Length: 630
Image (cartoon, rainbow, N blue to C red; front, side, top):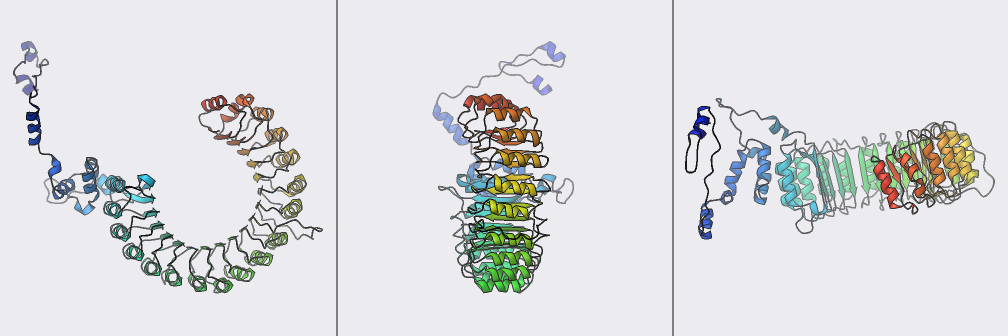
């Protein structure tokens, strides 16, 4: 302050009284005159040497001596050159500051300790945003904020997309990386993946999909440098084969999950190397559309002693013998989930062997297995003593006899049965057979798009399932009240979720009976496409269903009167409501819809052509927490 008071100059004045009081008055600023000659101004500017003229070595030395990662991140924002320089630095390039008055290194601050933390940050680049510049920014900006843990790149910018340089920057700046996912990137090759392997020693999961330039060389580098690898996903990688997988099997003892799809160079030798390793801890195996034979199935059956989830799909070179051997070698005793898709080798004979060998099998999904018939699924249900969930999709050899046999064969363990697109499941043309004892354990029954399944089949199956809680009958035009009412009479515990979408022959009589019997437990009711359901059902729902939280009345014969009735009854748990395609709902229901929307999270009014935009805007204004879809 005294220095300011005592300084004087041209055009400045001072007040003596103010000086005596220890204060000063504002002074006039002296004018700065710009030169009249522009050339003179340019000459002065040229004399100022910018920092950009410094070579990279000097800038790196400066950046390395900055005290914190935040300061380095700020410098990276100056220019593209500085960004790439900062992101190319590793932790070993940073100067260790000595503590004052002591000839020892300074203890890292909390911010610096986080730079090699657990790597909890996650970043995802997609399409045009996937560039080397953004990767450089990620490498420079995440190091001081806890470290990058997960990086996903989907696609690449067509003009200046991801290259090996971008991955190299991530490798140097993000040593805490745990998970790397690369999808549909043709500009990245082995060089970038090798740098990732050498710089990211803690890598645990790698996912490569449609990366044609990555070969066994890149996978070999991962195996040699990332011993903590636990999950490997490969899809449509045309240059990855047995050599890379063999290295993973030998050098990654913590590997627990593998998924390989559409990789033509992968054969029996690669799969055998992964599975038969003495230190193998694999518990999840997914093999799809590969050129492997029965030999791989035999190896899996013998060495897969830790496998719990097994997925086999599109294995055209495997036969019944391979699946039979896989089940009979008794090495898959811990398998709890099995999915087989489009494999001709899965037959009634091999399926029975699998049921005997996999004693812990709880969930089975068979899809597009044309050689499986009633005998196979009944044997599976009878011999797999732990089976709880069975899903059958597009099995043309399955009939209603097989369905009844499955249900009756597992009376105390089966909890869920799903039939999808099984056109062989048809009603009996003659008299109904003698039914076995009911299955008291079955809680969920789903029959979807089985065109021949009608009232007779529903009555027969319903009589075997008195403990149902979840019922899904979708796309079954042959179902009427005559089939649904007997099933409802057999249900003892109370239905919780009911989906009847596409059953357009169901009327108010069945829906009223449904809600009267199960109103105290029903939480979800889907009547999408039930064109014969009217306001009468809505009145019954309003009076009985106080636990309901999801109601779908799309394309039903609902009118303004029914909506008014629903709005007059308090629905404390209702969160999702759909009137999509209800042409008889008009603007007259605006106030009633408003009352309902105040307590909802979502309301679907799509294709309600009798509701104007002004009513939609009104609903959006009064119900800010409800998502209105129109």
